[in-house]
Length: 125
Image 1 (cartoon, rainbow, N blue to C red):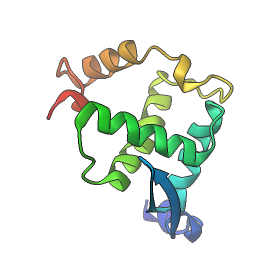
Image 2: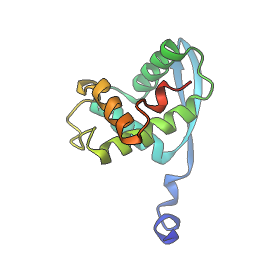
Image 3: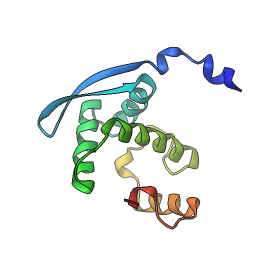
């Protein structure tokens, strides 16, 4: 079992630091290369650059929840959810379908039903 993970390309878990402007301030985000690849795919789906996606996610996160405690962790969870939602069929694997075109409320409702909670983790604070 472990061989499948251990013998993967080690570049996937190497970290890379990227500089980005969030709320008018320059900052850096350190993530593993695998996460940068997934975030780049998400950005491309909606015709954005990676820095544009990061700025938009940060802006909307601050608007919805106030201060951002750990943006890198939030981004990792975004990547995991994106991949999980693709496996569930809620996010099409066809990369020509923009994320912004999807019905987020319907997807969140289906996700909550699958988890048996009636609401998603994102609504628990």
